[in-house]
Image (cartoon, rainbow, N blue to C red; front, side, top):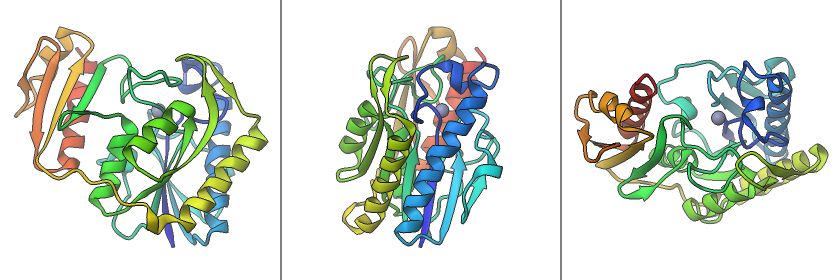
Length: 271
Ligand SMILES: [Zn+2]
């Protein structure tokens, strides 16, 4: 059985602000260890449930955060960036289930460190009219390959978002949001025990969780943080300016929509 893990950093146990998540800040070395610890807990749960192949895709920022020297077998690590499918690079139809570890709630929610790809440039993202965050994007990419997201870990706000996107998904709430930069964090032993247990349960019940699909064409509407960012983003071929700060693009499928969104975000961030 092959399990795919996409691991972000903002929803990892104990992480509450940008001091942890940026490689230039003082808590970053702690954050790498915390992230590797949560991922290892998921690996342990997956192995207990019978997984013999596990691929871990490092999905945060420069995507080289997880410490390979501490990563448990039998997981292999997809490290580094850029990657064509970014937070979901390496997923394909041979995977039996997906876990999203250390994920966070979408921009404009009340979750810890809430944002959608870029807190500096993206104000909101809609896919065919539905407000979508990173969790939704990753779930749709998995769905394209007919693989269900069976388990997510992060804060309580992410859990709510996950249930709305993926009915029946198992959730490990490792912290309770008390603001964008504050949370009540479970102690690490408890948090990691919870991740392992939820992962185990999720894999055993994976056949009852459906892949989340969005049929093409997929229209993305990206509201940026200011007009200059929209000026830059509308340069992308096929993009249409639909508001003072909003750019729209219609893609044939979710994979192209995902690439278009990341291109828009990248152009905007250089404005
Ligand atoms: Zn991240």
